[in-house]
Length: 296
Image (cartoon, rainbow, N blue to C red; front, side):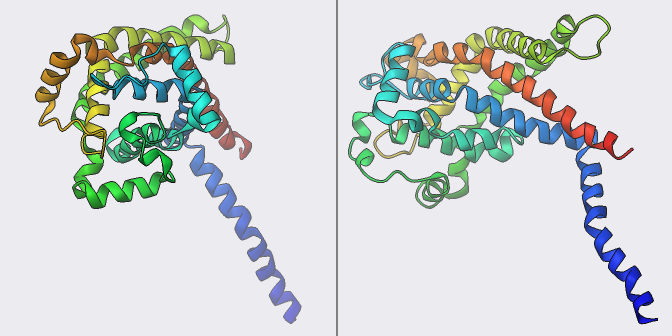
């Protein structure tokens, strides 16, 4: 009699983990949630693919008159990075960049400013020669130091205004172009392009969006963002008073070209970055959505 009473309880306990797993699969397979997770995967993958060019772009952008350690071609700049820092130099700050791709720019901006700091801390700038001999801080240590010594919470959002101003036109045009172009990469009779087709559509959409918006607005705002992100950094700070003051100083000291520093590695990375981004997004989203079909 007692055995009969305990048997259903044991069965219920055994089925509980399975029930939770089914519920988790169902939640993950919902279109909105699947797209959210796929966006995180896409951001991490695309950032990793172009991490060396992204870091080189940052090093180009934060150089002003008198700082010419990285006044080099893209090839020589990458070679210098590899020679001095090896593989870690290529990936420096990439964890922050990948994490920032998971949610919106406002929520993850502190990760972006920390990535900028990590990207230049080990570079061979004369102003950082003393600091570069010490043990380099990690992501959380850098963020905590900024919070304690550079103005608290607001220090983690320094440079966000030019960032927001430059992001909207690029992202909007990128999405519009991708949705318009992907049908030309889809074989007749199929609903979706192949993996190669997704890579091609992503490369085209990124190149179009970059070409149309970066030379006019986004590239200059990106340079301003990087400069403001190190505005209070010891040895490298620019001490700009405002966005307009920064533009005035940059143009006066470096010419109009100063607003477009880093554009060459930026343009070189856009096609592989967007190709990897859209491909990994669609592949991950389809994988999450397929979990729902397995339960039916």
